[in-house]
Length: 239
Length: 187
Image (cartoon, rainbow over all chains, first blue to last red):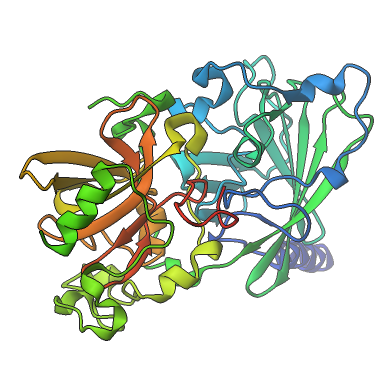
């Protein structure tokens, strides 16, 4: 009996130690910035087309030309959500809060909160497609892997700012995989894989980094209520 | 007619400056009129959480290309890049709100007629992380603002660059905003 108790204690200690070895990403960071390649003309990050997998037949709708209707061409101008992954790459502060059950990703742009369960639960079923999808996370060693599904068709990134002649739109079949690990004390590696079988022939990945900004800790994250004073949506000013 | 009204008159006649010059010919050589604006010192009695932030510096101009800013909207969706605006006037109001700050400037032409212009800047959080705080631009200040007029032709514009009386320039714009005279820098 004493032997079993001792073994159990050892196992519990080992499990606790294993949990303790998981990195804690809590802190304030800059938004994910591309390690190399094409950069948007705005400071938000965009995907570099050199990483794209070939388009499937029919995938041409990935590139969407403007229609002249500002609500369609640039919905954020009307305070519509940036969506994922575009919102995640937007040029604002990000706070990560982590415990054993959740990683909370709080992005200052549009005050978006992503609650990522880490307890092994499956994706929720029967939900309407969402701008930020349904994320679940798990650990692979010291790398946190977040799989997100159930998206609306929406903008992939901020490419419209770089070339207002086209937006890059993911489909509702997109599956996104984020792999977050600690590169060094001040940097997180953030690899983002896009698996969109309606558009691309295979998944593809681009590498980003998030710089820790402890000097922002004191001022913290700010409120961002887009509707508060959005005076000129579509170029029509309210006063 | 003083220098400021000269510039207003020029602007009223559609003349725009590609390269901004210091107001009053002073630039960095002239000491700032307001102690709150002296580079390298605390701007004003800021809230405690901001006291370790650096005030606006002339270096802001040099760092402009690297300044991060919010991308709430597409510049092209709201402003006309064929219609640059440059005014000099007195700040009447500042709206330190999302998604973009707005500040209002009374512009007096050579006949004494006042026009109130509104200029859009970046998001408050983004500006504060650049060191531009909520009362860096205050009512009563005389400033020059450069930007582009709203597509609807109203007296609203992007307000990409602000020049203070002492010649210091700061970028209040969102990163995607086009800046007059800086082709190749921003869109």
